[in-house]
Structure formats: C-alpha cells, structure tokens
Amino acid sequence: ILLDAGSTTEALADLLSRRAAVAPSNPADAPELVVITHAVPIAAKLSSAPGIALQILGGRVRGLTQAAVGQSTVEAAHRMRPDIAFIGTNGIHSTFGLSTPDPEEAAVKAAFVHSARRIVVLADSSKLDAETLVQFASLKDLDTLITDNEPSPELAAALTEAGVDVVIA
Image (cartoon, rainbow, N blue to C red; front, side, top):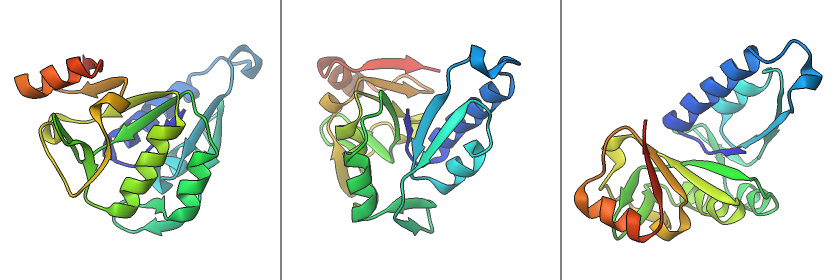
C-alpha cells in the first residue's frame, strides 16, 4: 500500500502500527505488508513495526507537511505500482475534484493517483465541498472516499456519478 502525507493518513499509520504490534507470535503466520510513503512522520511510526516492510520515497522535505516533494519524488512514485494508495486532500469538490494548496505536493499526489491500482481518499468532513489552489485528481480517478460525515447532496451526486464508494467511519 501507499500512504500519502497528512493527519488522516497518519492516523491510518497509527492503526497499522498497532495491528503490527498484535501480529501472530510466529511472523511466518502473517504476510509482510509493504508500505510506501514520502511522509517523514509516517515513516517514523512504521519504521520498526513488525510485519511491515517500509519503502521511503525521497526528495526535498517540505517543512510544513514533512513530506518529500519534487521531481525525484514524482519519478519514484511513477516507478511504483501499489495495490492501494491512501491519499489525503485539502479539498474534495463536486466539479473541481481533489486539490491541495501546494503545486509540488499536488504533483506528488497526482503521481500517486496515476500509479496505484486503487485510490482511497481519507478526508474528514472539513475537506468536503472545499477547493484549494491546485487540482491533482478528478472524482473519476477515485475508487473510495472514507470520511466522517455524509457529503452534501451535490457532492454525493457527483461521487455517485463518478462511481466512487463512500464510507462513513
């Protein structure tokens, strides 16, 4: 799997770390989970978790998000083919799609979206119906949205039309 940078994807990393901590006593009984990330906090959480093989994508680390960005990160993402990418976003809008304020982060997120077999967006309800500066994916690029509240009728209709499964968790 691939984990994007962000607070919601970091919460997923916490869950994966706890899952690894209660893994079977015989490591041969559980398959190793390969986790790819460009996020320093996520890498730190998972680096010593049993049962997780961590792959870190390099690049210039952006201080605000503690995520690697830049051409080398984008190129590395294009060489990967994860089964599932868990993507964070600053906005998900019925017509503008997914967006983030930083162009370099948008380029990395777009590379993740185009590289993975399945795209799962993790976004709390404050991101729903929001637009920020740079679009990195359309709703049709997504497979699943996991959020904490029902989307507005307009966004719900657009997600349905795009074939996106919505999970309220």
